[in-house]
Amino acid sequence: MRKSSNLKKYRASGINSWPEDDRPREKLFKNGEHNLSNTELLAILLRTGVKGDSAIDLARKILKKFKTFRNMSHTDMSVWKEFKGIGKAKIAQIKAAIEIGRRFVECEIKENGASIKSSKDAAEILMPRMRDLKYEIFRALLLDSQNAVINMVEIEQGTVNEANPIIREILHRAMHSFASSIICFHNHPSGNPGPSEEDKNFTKQLVQAGSILNIKIVDHIIIGDDEYFSFADKGLI
Image (cartoon, rainbow, N blue to C red):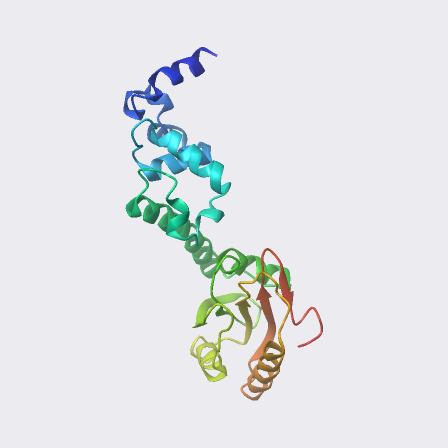
């Protein structure tokens, strides 16, 4: 209780006046970043607070609004206007940190050659990247003969309701990486992963083209809002 009371006393004067053991940056170096709360991690990104609020106070208010770091990504600048003192620089720092986290996971997958045993394995790799996008994007996992990931590639970025990947480009990227098979992905910004007739026709044409070049199309997965549709699981491939 005494510590909590002290925090209230020196909160208004800024984090630099806090005891070192309570400062997020010092706690990180002393105990490791994995021991910090989400509020403390965000406060380090913010670096400074605003008049009347320390970086910790500001971080707490931001997390109260967005709930999770995921919800901070792909947000319009206007959503941040209610936070006085949060300009483009701070927003850029937050969004960049979230993107670094996503790329870190993807690099780990590439370097470790994660083996894909099911549509769920595949969807979990690209779900964090694709579920919140406001436009359609077409990506592919390129696999070796043991279904291990060789590479993840972006084929096409489309509009809010369509992407038009070129089958020739998809297969060219697979051949260039000496891939034995492919799992294709695209997202539906609406959140509904159900396939359209265009999706079904495209998948059929891709499978046919792949068979000519001896490149197997293992699956085509459509990403929605925390759910996905697998053509393979539904027996459509």
